[in-house]
Length: 146
Image 1 (tube, rainbow, N blue to C red):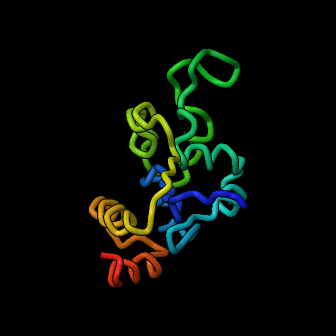
Image 2 (cartoon, helix red, strand yellow):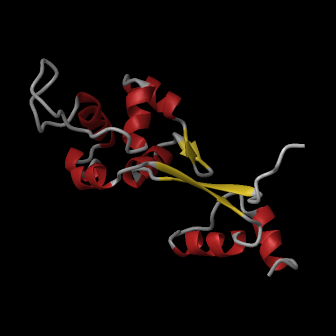
């Protein structure tokens, strides 16, 4: 018989550009903790992949070398077009420091049910609003696993 992992749950966290995320939600491209990258992509004529990569901090929004697409240190076309659509400064929407400091946009960690309340509490201490999808863990926190 297969040996099961001791940890019952997998905690996943991702880092996103909250300024872009918020503007997309405010302009009708999302709700309930999600944004519709496909709809936004169709609206502004920029590929979903590059929008998703900018949103999820997977690519740096500047050219790294001179090419036919732009000069080194200039913002990429997609970043400029997104900033223009929202009528904000590209430097404000895509602060280069944020993109350079985030080394990994996603992480995950196995956890036991006993660890879950502490991890959720720690995550919520950094949140400005309650975490979405909490009902099951909240029952655990209120139950006999304390």
